[in-house]
Length: 284
Image 1 (cartoon, rainbow, N blue to C red):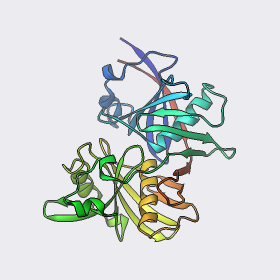
Image 2 (cartoon, rainbow, N blue to C red):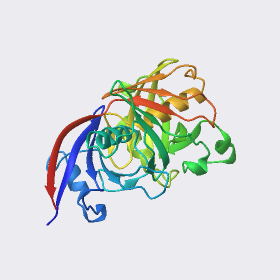
Image 3 (cartoon, rainbow, N blue to C red):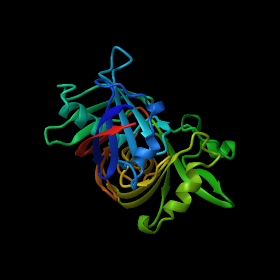
Image 4 (spheres, rainbow, N blue to C red):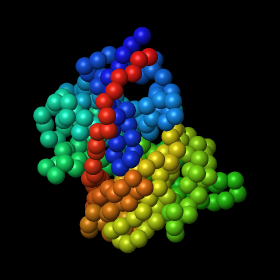
């Protein structure tokens, strides 16, 4: 029997079980992650975040993310902010800006003086092979908005890779959007061979959107940092949002601010909070 110390954290209600894998031994392959994620019989969380020692000379830490179903994924924006708060509060680093290795690439989060966390999420990618996404035709492959066939219903989506794959759908009213039905259908759609996170975006003004996200392996969450980045980027590319100022993204759990200058070479910057809920131990 093993005992594991953990910290429960959240970023705008997107909640995490955070594990220090530097100062204690933890093998995620041997852990009942899906059981721990249960909100009725377990700890209850959207994702498990694992902090490890870096694998390269440039990194300060390695950051691994596991969905509620136990599958490992490349990136999590809300988790990145909780990551910074965790390593700072636990005095694993005294740096204000750290270099973090993820399966989706290097990210550069920074703890701001006001307690919020800024995260350089890197460059967005749009080509179908980088999502990955299987377009229905060569013409569709070159378009900014692609078509996903849900049964016989064509759904226009904007595909963005923010270290993990996203499909963004523009809707008139996010509160009435069929998030559960379309989210589940598109998340595991054969046109997305590695599954996809599905965002439903309502544009309120050129600097303000509402967003709901159906995350792969988890379902709808209170907030999704990479989803907010993907939605803001998609909106700017479509001419619906302004790249001159930060975009406020209102999610069910709260608001994030996203900045992207509008070119493929520009990095996406995300700002938002991260909070600790409680500390605990679990045996397995």
